[in-house]
Image (cartoon, rainbow, N blue to C red; front, side, top):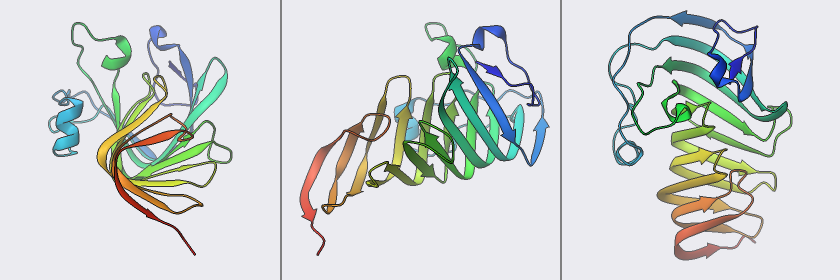
Length: 210
């Protein structure tokens, strides 16, 4: 993946799988400190969402908006009030995508799935999370809301969204508001656009509107 020339940084050539267009920034700051590596996905899900606890980010963006393309096609866009880019030290046996630097997003963000903020297939909103733009993977916490193009609305506390694996999943309690009523349960698996989904442990309640 490479960063468009309008950005304040550049990336190695081996990241040229997709292009990133950096459209709007309120402010930017860089530094050289390296943080401790984040814990595993299960540990983050079960524990604190304070992903990177030590050191300082290599880049800070406020009021940022990014568009991500793959082979010339726009695949998703990310808008956030605050983004911090952290080094992700390499581990043997993991891919370059998994070892790529992470964006830590906070103070509210929106991922526009399948397009830009004007035209898209779904939206994912939350208070904070991490985003690996090389792997196309976002992990979101707190007031997570996923809405598809049918207007179906998922609410939960924690969610993992992956473009590359075409997967959305959570183990937390979920509620889904549809035109037919309200579904509740614990755990969910879905395609990345939230068009086909399965509640893993339904509670058995289905509230139908008048």
